[in-house]
Structure formats: C-alpha cells, structure tokens
Length: 334
Image 1 (spheres, rainbow, N blue to C red):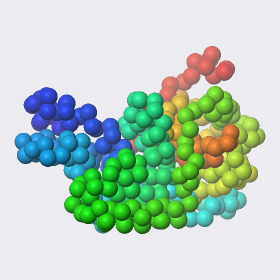
Image 2 (cartoon, rainbow, N blue to C red; image 1 turned 60 degrees about the vertical axis):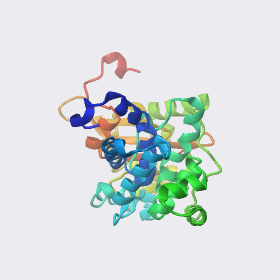
Image 3 (cartoon, rainbow, N blue to C red; image 1 turned 180 degrees about the vertical axis):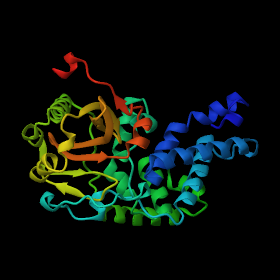
Image 4 (cartoon, helix red, strand yellow; image 1 turned 30 degrees about the vertical axis):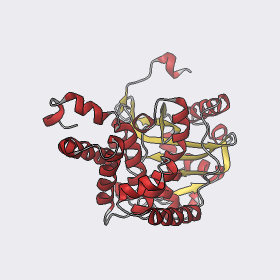
C-alpha cells in the first residue's frame, strides 16, 4: 500500500493485505496484464483502507474486497481493446518468408505473470489454481465481455455461488446464470481445452526441461527440435509473427534467430508453467536480458515457446537481473 497510509492502523492494513495475492490472481485473469493487475489491486487496497470505517460487516471482508476489485477492473476494461496472443492475430508464418515488422504496443498482448504473485502456497490449492492462470486460458478469457468474464472467473475458477456473484454485481441470479452460459459458449469456441488440466512437474517433465535448457545453451537445434511436439509453436511478443512445427522453428533459430547462439538461461516460473530468463551475449561482455520464455508442454513434448521480449519491464517483475557477468570457466564448461 502507498507510503502515506502504510504507517497508520497496522492491524487494519494487515487484514487487507492477506488477500493481496488472491486478488492479484483475480485481477490478472480479468485484465490479462501483470502490471495492470497490480495497479488494480493497489487501487482496491487504497479504496478499502479509505472506506474501512463504512464497511459494516454486511458481507465478509473477502467478498467486499472482491466487489471493489471487480469494479476497479470493469472501469479499467471500459473502452479498452482485448489483449491477445500472436496466434490469435495472424496465421503461422513460414520462416523463409518471415519478416518481424513493427512491434505492437504492450497493451496488445496477454502478459506473463510470476507464479509467486498469484499462486497460493498450499500444494493442493496451488495445483488447482495453476490451470486458470495458464497463458491460453487467460487469453481465452479476453474474448468475453467484462461482466461475463467476472461471472465465469467467480463461478468456475473461484467456486462462488450464483447468489454471491449476483450480490457482488448487483444483479439477479438468473442474470448471473445467463451470463455464465454465454461465457461458457464463447470460451468453448476459442478451442481452449479445459478438460486437460495442467499437471505439477513430474520427473519426466523436469528431465525434458533440463534437456531443453542444455540444448538451447549449446544451440544444438537438432537436440532442441527433437523435444518439440509436431504442432509446437514459437511466438515473440511484441511482434505478431509466430511459427508452428519443429522444422520452421529450427529454420528460424538458425536463420534470423542465430544471434541467440551462446545464450544463457535462468529458470523461473510463470502462469503455472516453467519459464526461463534468456540472456544473449552482450558486445561489452557478459550476457544481457533478451526474452522471458514461458514453456508449455503436453504428453512428454514441448508444445509452446512463448518468448516475451519486453525485458525492461518483465525481468524486474520476475526478480531477474538485466545483465549477467561473464561466466566462470567451470560454468562455461558444463
């Protein structure tokens, strides 16, 4: 919370702050932006602190905060364009004809979110929440009208009763049920498979990620593409260009992407999935931040490499340095 109120009424602030993480997850699903979600939660906390004396306990503190957060998000979404993934905007590009073109504004993209900002610590709750923050699901939510989006998240992700959602939105149970039905139909049309939930990392997955990391750092494209699903995609926001299939991905990597040779990777996590901070060789020495890679996989193969290039904003969010010094000889030899 802001410094002008942080020193006042510590017990009240602590009451509010215990809900920050789950509210951040809710606002992220609503807005599709890590930075806008944090702004929305901060505004929610400030409004709640200022209005705490008027909160008369007619509902739970949690419900009251969600009401405020929902109103903040609906205001932020008013008149804004929906965020997307490159795969939502254009057809896959053959690498022989690939041209990056101009970058699109950051507001065009669904942004990655650190797991540490949204996922609960409890293993069972964490496993359940991971599915609803994956990039494909958050992107699919952006196809819904804002109030439908709120209804679907509250009902199907957070398991609120229809009567609770109706009270929060100042509407009727019938209206909530109707909005949920329309939201489900729209979500189904996006092709997102909700019947195949994201699973916690198994030893097989960890081995796959280790092999990917080693192949990428060696820039061994034969080894890397052997790990890819036949329909694997590579995307690079803020550019709308993307490609599908191991062959085209390999051609890109050894063509226009050849400057990634010699990269180093640092493991992290985003959107309930493994991720890597990628650093390319810097002319002055060491390695400089280049991309945040969010890795998707299924059935023992990598299905998506989502390389977000807005490192100046994203790396601090993920607590990743913007520059790595020269590696020690022993590290280079691994």
